[in-house]
Image (cartoon, rainbow, N blue to C red; front, side, top):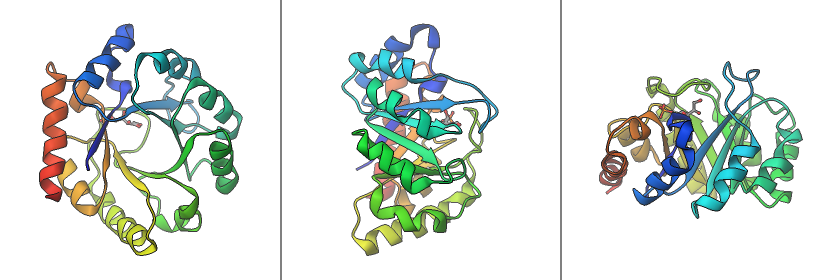
Length: 221
Ligand SMILES: O=C(CO)[C@@H](O)[C@H](O)COP(=O)(O)O
């Protein structure tokens, strides 16, 4: 089943609550929350206080993507704020196994993120410990960038490994997702898709979200 996680980075921050409610009504499956620190990525967004503000507004899982250094320091804050998933970058977390254990111990589902250039080999030793792998199909830091197609074969490779090991891990794609780019990713085995500008940038969010979801479902049918 294809799941769509609208990225609030592309929403209108002056009415964030309404924006989240609108995509929930439109059929969103998760809400994707991009946390940026201005160090690991060249942009600053928001912190746990925003997760805490959104938590009572929606029943949807809150999927928190930490594009930050020193993630260990903030895991407890995001867990208390109401995150359902916390994903951390392999490139920014040298003690990845410990970080994942901390997320799990805080009662949150852990995931790891790979930048477009990062090989899947770096996460094979911890596959059994995680619920989610996020493949970046843009270099993280900004919305509205062009989808990097060369990531797709990595998705296919990891999907095969997950199947062979009999694991239950969601494969998520983030960056430049729209009704065309979702197709090769869904065919490669991904099942959760983050979309920012392709949903919040459109007048009719419901039509945009449903068109992306349907394109993904047709691709795997
Ligand atoms: O993490 C990021 C960017 O760093 C993404 O979640 C973007 O926010 C996705 O935006 P679009 O590419 O869909 O506009």
